[in-house]
Length: 288
Image (cartoon, rainbow, N blue to C red; front, side, top):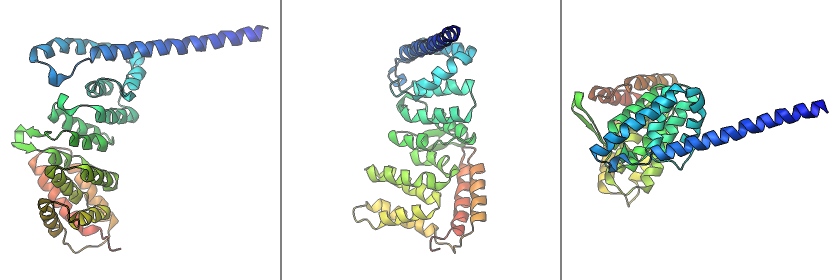
């Protein structure tokens, strides 16, 4: 009888904790829904100034009580029914209270749910690079850039204006190319934009692998492709006419150098990327 009573008490305790967590999580969800009930792109400067103090208070509260808010914040970023802007700002907040690799990946994954027109494009690009340098896979978040045809970044220090594809040059080549080549091909096949297609051809060239070469060749032989695309392909293929051999060790060494080069955004980094990509072409042979 005494044992049964103890078991009931333990069970009641678990139920109480579980129910409390559900109510707490729902309360936090309601707060997120209430605070992030806006789209920055639709606000005037005056309206934005009114919202900033509210966001600051929310950030301060979560940071000061991170042990309570860490798990609810994670759950909110996993959900799909929050305001698009929350998935950016909430990710920034999570980065303030956690540096766990799984949380950094959650932050990157949440970025795909943002509306890029709500965000500062330069800050978005730097955010991608920061996460990437920490070892996070930001490929999908980077390709999300194609959702906004007007996306571009101006780097004042170098008088450098980057369009979609040029922004992605600083991100995608940091990864093994087999992780993103198929994704680029899928975006290409669904796009009617010449500029988007041109940027993808360029990125496929920088990827330097056999699958990318096959995709480029299949696009070239497609009678329905625009003349501009075929002209660009001819240019990239001429750049690729090197004496080739398979040397995985040298190939990976150059890949590592590219990754190091792309830790900064500058015209010099692009020049170095071009040189390293040209060198990379010598050390993979699709005939083998």
